[in-house]
Amino acid sequence: MHKTLVDLTVVGPDREGIVSAITSFIFKNGGNIEAINQNVVKGIFGMQLEASFESLPSEEYLERGLESLAKELNLEIGSRLRGSGTLKRMAVLVSKEIHCLKAILREQASGRLRVEIPVMIGSSTECMKIAEKASIPFHLVNDQEEGKREMRMLKLLEECRIDFIALARYMKILSPNFIWRYPNRIINIHPSLLPAFPGASAYVQAYERGARVIGCTAHFATWELDEGPIIWQEAFHVKPGESLETIVKRGKRVEANVLVRALKLYAKDKLQIEWKIVRINR
Image 1: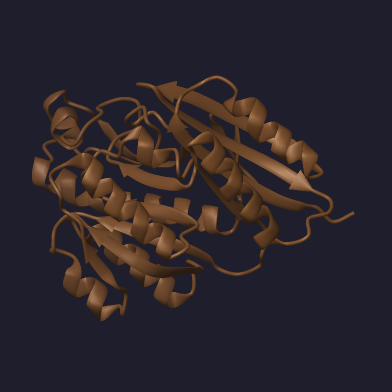
Image 2: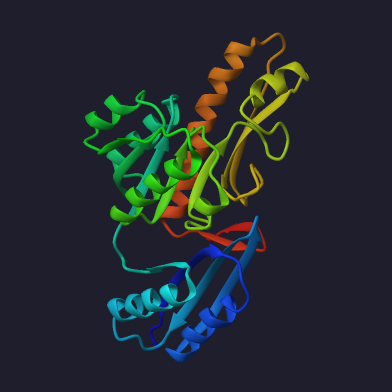
């Protein structure tokens, strides 16, 4: 029998009975829990739940029930049906560097990255002209206060019905409050073979410590900085006497390749997470 698969995200102030209330709602509506992951950080509860339904009247019926439950529990509950057969809708978050963004747009335009990009959000205006040339709506969101900045971004993502997010060298740290709304749906690129050389100055650290192999990692973003499940990695050998400038240039090419590879795998539903390890389905 055909099953309807639904992803639920739950975010809000922590208190007793949340998990019981959500799972009871699923069971009462003929659903089954396929997977569940939850955590509490600084008093904020976050949960990702995958449920299957053998008989579901409509998506609107589920949404109305979840809206009522969210109001009752004073939580935010988001839902997304899987397996619609349409292209996934991907948002791109950018700051100033353009090499990853250009690779994404080149692959999408060629048809090799099969996604829709209905919105680009930038922390600066450096990428605005590139977005305009690609006919992608660009929104500058650079509020200094984290909560205000992220609420504006979340509103845009919801309005655009975003399925997943690409961090194309987006240089702002995302809070648990943001990440829990898109669990395992935010793909980041880090210029290092994680977990070594974390942070923004990875190439400098590698150069100063005499590294002979330098790599890049595409991973799912989590509230633990640079520790999310790894999707794809590539590396290159440092040549004797090679300058830092050359290393950075080579690294940027690898960054773009690795990020695009991860986005393609996600867009094709090739990724499966098992206990924080990403399996690639061939």
